[in-house]
Length: 346
Image (cartoon, rainbow, N blue to C red; front, side, top):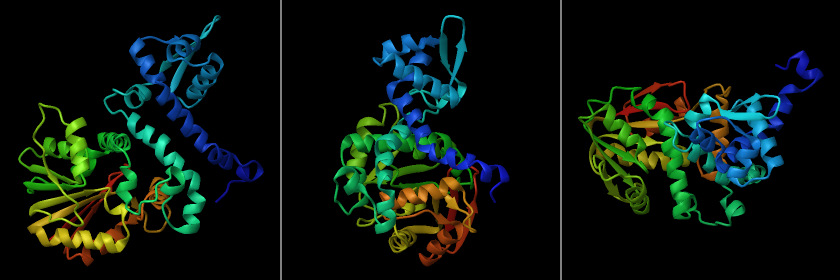
């Protein structure tokens, strides 16, 4: 319900219309390296110094820095001579490239890929299909051929996923006690952030990442250190190739890429090879049953329209997919963060 104040002056609409401006300010400050420079310097810097070190115009940098102060991404100390800028705690933690929970790569994926796709949201709604062809000139019908259209794009996407799991991974993996499952396959596990978190939480479990050959090749090349070899890898297309037997299959942000029929196809395939007493762990952002939100999930569902052939779903809808695939029991855990957990048992 609108407040009398909003009807007199539409504060909320102005906030919404400026939403993409706010996003681009944060994306640009990350891309230019402002937060990294300030953290590395160990002290507050003037706009002149920041502009010179980053090769930017002074007047442009001043406006960007002030906008970041307004967004509480930077703080400013103003004396009689000049303003000195420094990072806030949240920027040091999340917006620097080497921050312990850095979201830098995720934000760059939003800026360079999602931002461009969303320019064609109206076309996606009219046509009911993804917009990679308009955004990037890609006509492939396969979701992942478009998503992984170059090694650079694949790496960007995989770094972004790792960033997501750095803030959400532990919560979805402890939503249920997974310790009884000692043989685990992470289908579409990509660069392995979730698999590594799983092993740290459940050290008696063996985890295998099952993904496309080019994804595993890129993972081994860019994401696996010589000291860390605890994860094993299985190359294949889980829709087309055989899936080995396991106690538990993790499908994290997988089903939301596909229409219902294809989801049931994959889940049925998993159910048939799953050991008795085993199960499947779905990690997805859940929509409320009454369509009231969460807003992030509703926006992500639109993003699935723009980028894939799938959608976000309610807990009931995921339960129906699991039941159709032959899983007997379903449990739901809401984490309070971006992603929730659904455990289906055989």
